Image (cartoon, rainbow, N blue to C red; front, side):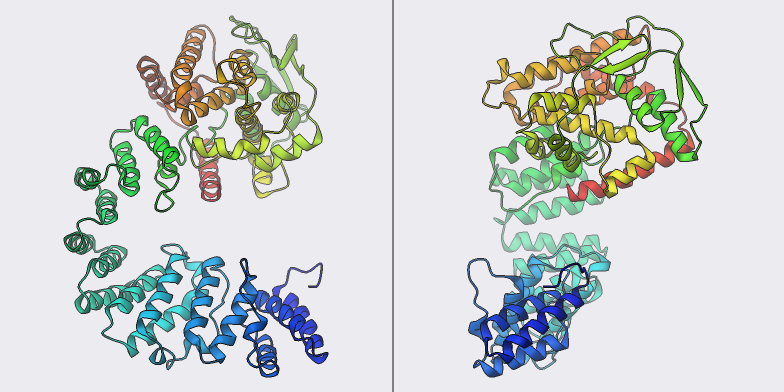
Length: 614
């Protein structure tokens, strides 16, 4: 393969040239390998298919030159599919193309004349065509984004020709409807599904019809079809969950939960009903206990029938459940405003009423070193002192100047955190799992990363945060480092562990963004380990209570975030929950500056994009 090019066609041409050389030398096996590479780069390139035909003519069909071993290369699979079709076995070829589409749906594997030929389905068993269409559906999203549908059009043409050739085959009509619905041909999907239900009355036909109606916005007809599906097979509890989800999408939560209760009465451990039930109950009353119970269920039932996104859907965009809230201190707001307006820092002065979190001051200094910062006074209680005696300290003060007391981390630790840190995650257990990548870092490096957060990486995320809010990147680093501490020396029992002791020191140290990060790590530990929940709930309540007491005498920048963290804590103490809700309700009153609203919308878009890929 040519080096130094990202052009698939150029890469295909390079592979094709090597294949032709091998053909000229009679080395058919090497020619086949290069043709497999070429077709992987350019699956519809005519020259590649011409060379494939030449290979077939010189090797008795060529199929055996593209064997399907345990982990076949996708180009090998696709080339074999075309050779099988040329050898009079198009059904076998279609199945291989569908497998390739399931592996890489974005490639136009089926965009060749024989797949779209009108006469093809007449020579195939309609049951087999239906299975191919269902195989394609199993490997693509529902629905497929509009910009990603073009490689699937050949299968839709296949479906149309198949329905024309076998107009009364109920299974084929239903499978064709499922494909059409996914690729946006909703009207066609309704027509085919309705015809299929008439030709083959069954649970599956009614499910396909219900889904088609739902995609068309015909909710009443969708629910009626799904209820008929239940009548066909009262033991298929997945349909109960589908009915519940459809009802909930239209605000009919009580009816939806009635269907979930019916399913759970038949099987209390049926995963679809459990997941949907917890999501809907959380949606109804906002009780975190539903989400914690769902996380526990996921941990105890790792072999669910399929992947569920209910927990991630409930946590998405919520402070600490699915993202890091932006800092609210004066230095953070000032820095964001200066970046938004392009205001230079040269000769500028910022006066603070009192010392702000050390991480905030360091972030401001790194981003705007020419900004002159002064502090009016040192309030009481002194924010430069830990809230309790601690064994691990990150900072020391010389007057208003704050400096790290731990050495900078080693370069491998810097690279590791730059690869891992981001401001969003699907839910706390997923964040815990992702942080295992920091398990091998030494404690000194983890502490060094907290006090010496590296620059953002040269990625889309890094560039976005550099332009709009470098303080959020600092918070990302600190949050993921504290999550990494949960994986430090896990052979040590929790009560006497280094990880517990260090996190508690960070929690009760100098009031800082690290305080929030450490509490989030403890909260996350409670999500994944029920045995620590009572202790973490007590610690979270104590830390919030301490912050509330201090706030009676001076501003506490982390107070609002601590309140959100209490609300994210499993088995949180009721009094702490009530206090947190009161704080957030009080602080949520009042107007929000337009510039802050714009920045919040920007972060929301970024978080949504990151969450989709987390």
